Every structure is written in structure tokens, then in C-alpha cells.
Image (spheres, rainbow, N blue to C red):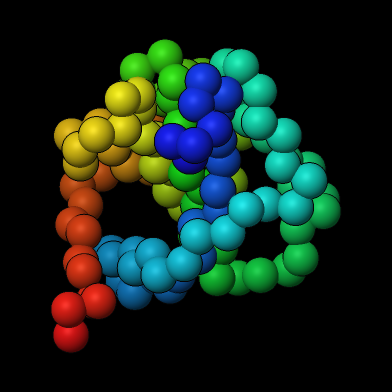
Length: 113
């Protein structure tokens, strides 16, 4: 998403849900995604039926780490990830549930195993 700056980017998050845990193991560009200045979107009706989609991630080129009302009203899946400019650390990433409450997350690097 950093490569789209100053436009907003959007991705689908794929993974699995186990009790109170969501494991994201893949990201995918939604079909027919539109990336613009201050918005990003995709036609939900063009998505295949895929129960592994657990949410979306999008960037906030403005630097705001908080979801807007529009973000919350267009939540797809269980979670929303926001990556805020300047995209330089984990402190610029936040996860939210459908009610807009911040979710605690952990990044697990499986590449070393």
C-alpha cells in the first residue's frame, strides 16, 4: 500500500478464525479495486464466495490511524486493518472490529521456522 501513496490502497485479508483468534496468512488485491485520493473501494458483488476472507486492510495517506465513519460503515469481514502514513513501523498499524473498537494484535514471522 505504501507504493500507492498518496492514494489510498485496499487489500483483502484471508485466514481463519478460531474462537477469539484470527490468523491472517494471506493478502489479496480485490478484483476491480479503485484506489483514489482519500478513498479506496471495490465492488463487493464481484468477490467470489470465499469464507477465508476475514477482513480488509487499507491505508490512510492522511496519517490518521483511526477509522472514519465511512470505514466503519463499509467494513467487510470481521476486522479492519489501517496502515497510516508514513508506514514506517508497527506503531502506524491498527486493527479494529466492526464496532470500531481497537483490537490487540501480534505479528508472527513464520519465515524463520
